[in-house]
Length: 312
Image (cartoon, rainbow, N blue to C red; front, side, top):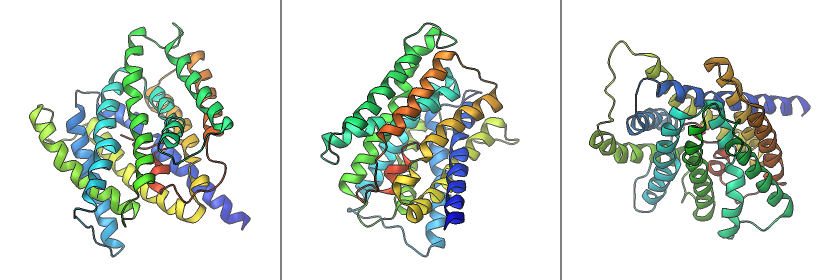
């Protein structure tokens, strides 16, 4: 039993490391001018192929009817298209590691939303976590020495659109359920619908990307990010089924920590003492705001967005 626990801890750490690298990969993907709608289309297309294959391997079908289409549209819009549009624009201007730090606010933002929807009750401990997390955000935007360039401050609210969307998405899924879908089916269907919705946006704005050979670093980085997300998401769902959502939700710490680590290693980023202090406050806030016991009301898809596309 002891050895199996360490195995699950190892899976948790590997999942966090893999998800954490998607932010630096997103930074590379936008480095030569690729824009958000074009990137989103190809991310969803690759995700649809990989997750669709997983659904088939499981021997399941992917329903498309009036009952599940609203679920697909909701997840596609507030789980990918809106938040990733914001993230891809913000990561052009902000350090990748800082994006990872800001994404750790998802559980903190989810708490007041869950109370407003009647899914959770007030807790002083979790309210303290929310307050401390917001103090961490203030340490990024308030001091003059916190960012390399003060013009970056304007992009912090844009970066926070993604965690806010993920917080809403998780709570809405918890509130209305997946209507008979498992999480992989839901994300596969949402990826297909997202392709249909994002294609005209990419074409209409002139942002559609036509891959040309030889592929460059941004192409490989974006493809790797999409494939990593699909693979690790499936692993995460498996982990939730084996260990429960409370244990699995701790992946948020690893995603944030590895996001900063990969940004330093791959992109050579460095941060002021204010940002490091913010990271510390975020981790304290995450610890306090996490649920203290397993909950059957939370879907795995909800827990995954303690980080999600954390990974654009």
